[in-house]
Length: 151
Image 1 (cartoon, rainbow, N blue to C red):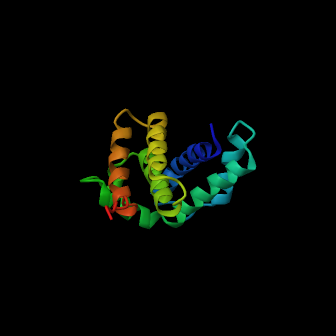
Image 2 (cartoon, rainbow, N blue to C red):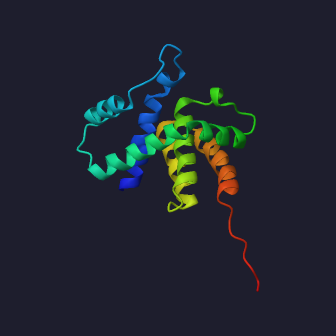
């Protein structure tokens, strides 16, 4: 598995792991550095520094832009509120939305295809189509295809 794909997989796992913290009224904040340290200690493999850096960049980016990402996701998910989405699907959608917004060097198709692969790996059989529909609609707004000219 290539570095960006591993980083996406790890970022999805970390974001999913944080979902109970996010929904707990008892927890006012969380120590992201401690969560990351704990995750890397349990990763079970030697993780290259570039994979860690890319993973952490994505996780921190998603957390910094979470409110904006959530608005985008809800806007493009017809009749689905965020609180009705599974935590793993929401983690995948947030990560992929962040990539669509913040990493123009990653092609739109790659963002969507990788999200579908993550959904196949971590979620239910309905999730890939659900995630594809939301990200496809979002991509059309965020990264419209250039209009070809006949001139």
